[in-house]
Amino acid sequence: MTSAPEEFAISQRLHQLVEEAEGPSVSLGWVMSQLHERAFGLFLLILALPCCIPFLYGVPQIVALPLMFVSAQILFGRQTPWLPDSLRAREVQTESLSQLASRAEGWLRRIEALSRPRLAALTRAPVDRVVGLALVLFSASILVPLPSTNTVPGIAVVVVAMGLLQRDGLLVILGALIGTAWIGTLIFAGATLISLLRSWVGL
Image (spheres, rainbow, N blue to C red):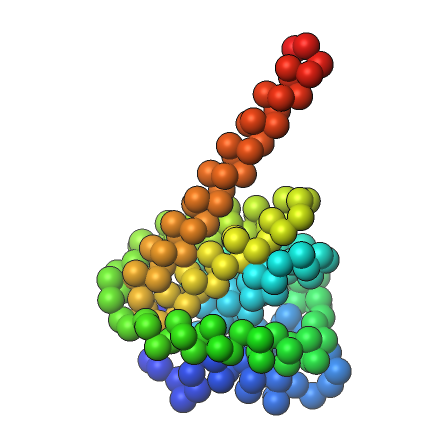
């Protein structure tokens, strides 16, 4: 899950991906192949960043399944991410990736400036499997077909991914708290709605 630091900071790495792209679109498989030993954290980050944009429809639902799939692999202790051909073949426009890198750069730089290696045990096995379970739940909530339901869990996954990349357990905890609060809100809202519906129909 962890590795030696690379030459490029995380905020710069996204721009480097755009520069390395050889066409108007790239597949998720290609993106994964470019990330090397930091693939888990960076791939989670790249997939989750579009989900942080409020009132964005379509894209979050496209990336949610690969996000869940990769998160599940952390849960089961896999050392490198893998996607089946059907998910590897999904494409993203290079221009969209470039816009995403530009929009996210400022926030990623702020997180990088605040983060440092601490509570690193939370980013390594076996504790990272618990983190993987949380990521699966956060990713699943992105699929809820309600307005702007992708934003909060997307932010939670981004913060956790940055924690894994920076070996910062405090960021992992912060992301987990954000995501857990969101899941709790969804459950409470769902239970309240069901109760109201039952009262309306006389059940």
